Amino acid sequence: MAGWAPLGELLETEIRQRAEEGCVADPAPWLERLQAADPADICALEGLYDELTALSPPVDLPYREPSDIETIHELRPNGVREMTSAPSGRNLFEKILGGWIGRCCGCSLGRPFRIDPFLRHPKNRQRHEIQRWLDGADAWPLDHYVPAQSRASVRGLRLAGLESTRESIKAMEPDENIDPMLLALETVETAGRDFSTADVALAWLDLLPLAHAGAAQAQALVNLFADPVFFLAKASRERLESIDWHRVATRRNPCREWSEGRARADVYGYLEPGRPERAAERAWRDARLTHDKNGLYAAMFTAALIGAAFCERDTFNLIDIALSEIPLHCRLSAAVRKTLTLCDKYIDWPDCWDETMAIARSYDALHAIPNLLAVVVALWYGQGDFEKSICIAASQGLDAAANAATVGSILGVLSGSRALPGKWVAPLQNTLKTHLPSLARTTISDGARRCFALLEEHKDRG
Image (cartoon, rainbow, N blue to C red; front, side, top):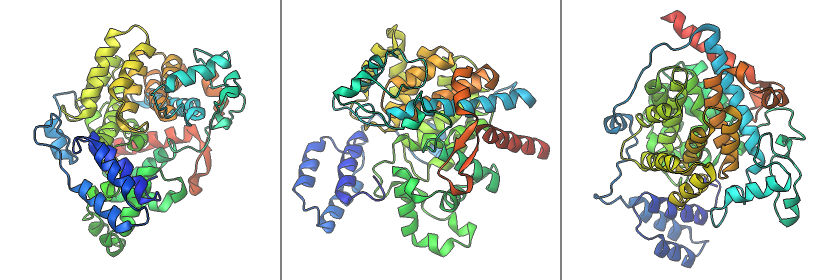
């Protein structure tokens, strides 16, 4: 894992990351150099890492992938930046609550599959392994939380997150897809809607136990601790703003385009109903602490889509609005558009997903691009049905918990909390557990109430 992984492991992931960015035409020679290096020779490994970092994409690469918000805005297509007729009052609260509940249902559904070969598979057959487990439990196609027992277990399959299985679930268990939501909410409550990246960093340092930081988060915190400006500026918010946040997010961080940044984006969609541009910009402020390029875009896409879901119900229109907040010629946008053509081509989602995985086969199972494609496929084939959508998301593999959580959040906003099926909502008992010491146990509805209170406070201030 970035942050605490040996340098050699980081280098191997970095080589593949540089290849994905177009900086390395063939990763094989670089991997051979890494294998030939002495793992104890830190200077040699650092030198190899510096060589990789110094590489730039060729000028004729078809993608343009900036990380600063001004250039992102310049390169995005035309789109709906702010929508009319956003809900208010009780209707608004029900949609926010639906988002929180839906996210927790989806996350709980996918948690048992956060283990190989459901997460990673050498031949990208994750969904086939999930189907094998569910077939062995007489539960395919999936229509409820994952059964803990399956005849497939005698052939080597096993689950993670057993406390979230059908037989045991009693709460939203502590999870890396929920903790960041609470951190984002704390940031806005403390620093206001015009929070900065420095405010996000300070909230993490105050509230997030390092043992529960994700890969990109861990490396960003390591980089922040090593930044001399940080120690000089801790007492001065103004000086904190002078930190090179791009360096914090990217130095020795081969996970900078992974999907962690998306986990914090939902809150910014909830807090900007009907304002996809503002939701995406706030997600950018947060995600740039840990992510770069498509890792940023995935967070912006998600926040914009959720913000738009308060006013728009058509799935295709929602995806189009979200695409309009990221660069037109980036890898994520190209992959989403290609996936949409496959959705048009195939009647059944497994056929579409198999070809989609062929498009994204070079990416790590936790990379932002294939996981966002899983969200797109689930939204398309789910056709606005909450249960169908989250079950497709969880059945595809990769980061099933994160993807089903995002899909559940979107469908929860679209439906509102009262329309969510009781068989999914009731087992959670409105209980939300976290890894945050200051908020170890709370309620799911409390998250919605806090978001709604922030919106009411902003409205009162005019």
